Length: 155
Length: 232
Image (cartoon, rainbow over all chains, first blue to last red; front, top):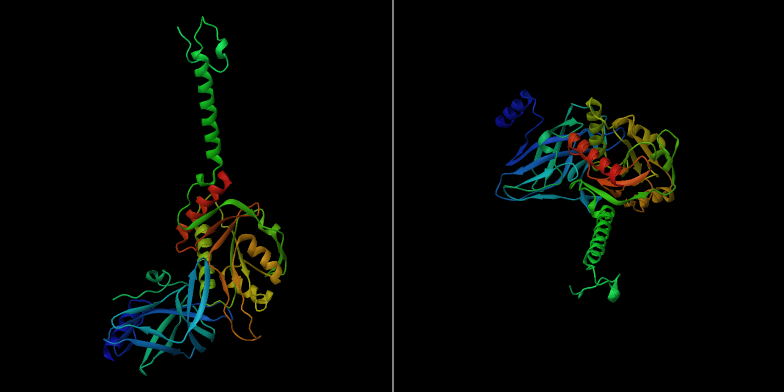
């Protein structure tokens, strides 16, 4: 897709750690992977924006950079952090879902050694059969706007 | 001059010559001052009089002595309540297989340490960061060592038998739960998300939110430390 190529090129040119992926009208940005400690799982974060008129459901993800990927959600309540595995995440029409530290994340299990600053590819899988390719830079800390916690949806 | 209002001291035997009003009033006045003094004294020991450190910290009304425990640090040295004395410490409970919250908070604390090091005018020092692994079955000394060094070589990782972990955790009121699962399976541990500030006397003083912004955290820390030093 020319537009996607163009956007990727533009963000690369300005060194913006944002990559766009388009699967129909699903857009992904603010994607990054937290540099994991040695022999540890890595957490991946992003915003998934659904610009279509129908809800879409994320059911999984794959990458060549890790053995497998699970969808997890950390929840902090009453001063206790709990984590649970999610089978799927639904993104309502014209809304977005934020994957960010202390909220939802992709858990990259048994990743290959990752280096700060490198970019890896993650294929998001949706219930409809659609895929979205996400490029995520490996970073120690989040992009500045993404420092918040939890997840929320907005139009 | 009639004496309709004799003071309790002089009673009905009060001399007629001089009105005793000044005696009454000095006693009443004295009592008032005494009551006032009591109030002032009481006020100074009422816990609510602690200055408010803001929404990101909760001070203990009475600092909690941490009971005796013995764990082992990532260098293989014994780690007991003695290691919590002599400097301020920040305790965080977690486990190294924690993919999200633990590395994120330790990374934030590493940034706070960097911010401290860049300050030339700071009277305060970076407290010692102690990561308490509540998952001793998976977090060996070697594992803790590589984990701590990834964040900062000065950070201390400690763990040990569950009974000892319980003493420390319940000493500061930190909740954790490791599920019963078959060996070799991945599992997720529930753990306290806050940071526990321990003063140089080894007393648990305050519960802090994790640092979103290093500079704000440094200010919060200084505020809480000052309250602790002057009031507790």
